[in-house]
Length: 370
Ligand code: FE
Image (cartoon, rainbow, N blue to C red):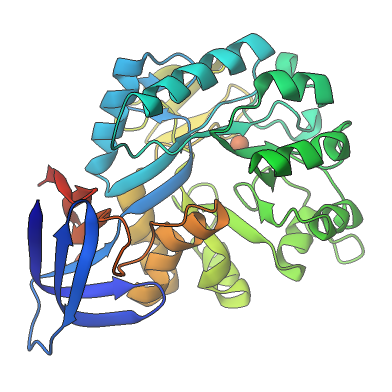
């Protein structure tokens, strides 16, 4: 099947912004025709990638059925998301295996899907930085347990480098192609640096749930700035001040930032009471907290995260396409998405000038139209 997208501003994270047309064929980008235009109708960007989301619209990674995962996938098209990782919370071995099996089967049963695997957030994290993770299930990593819970589609795992077993399981994770992200950690600067020197160059929801910066002990926050880490950020204006987002953008640059939602099932639903991995969460004015006031995931939607980042930093559209898709695709070693380039998968999002999603394409098919 062929399709032509005409009169658009094409935004590629590498080549930049130019006007013209794009031809899609057999699920891929067949050709790109740059063309001088006085004005364009819409903005075309690579489809967004969310590597860290626990759920939305009443659907939760830990409790979902395959049918619900399908509904979740469908909903995310409205946000321009064409690749995402359902993300677990700290859980026992049995629950981890259950979720992984379900996601693995779901992917296998489809020829085209935006589900690219799973992200284990915990349980091998620091209890002292648990945030909204259930303390009862937090534990050390062991090689034996890792063998049981590891599948080829476990693309990402959030771990604390100071927690027992971290260096025992590292080689096995690397061999599996699983990307390790440091998070929910009280590691000091040297522990962060040691992990970095061992090839772990990613931080989960920076700077939330990591050790603060002190001028004599830089902590995880200082390590995030000082070392060449790639950092996830929840740009909802609640988890971090807009100025912090801008500060990371100015110091580290758009090449090192990956937007995530960290959304929970309450996203898109009304304010009220919800459950997150066995913990009670209340949502008021879109802000999700535990009874002790800890932030418990977000109700952020990806489309809004993209708009917020642009507003907080005044970045270029090229940079916006880096933080919303390209950086994560590279980081997770997914080769054929995240660019508008010949031969790449036709996973695209069409936006109006206010950055509202108007159309989403998955493998060259329109999967959402406003
Ligand atoms: Fe978290």
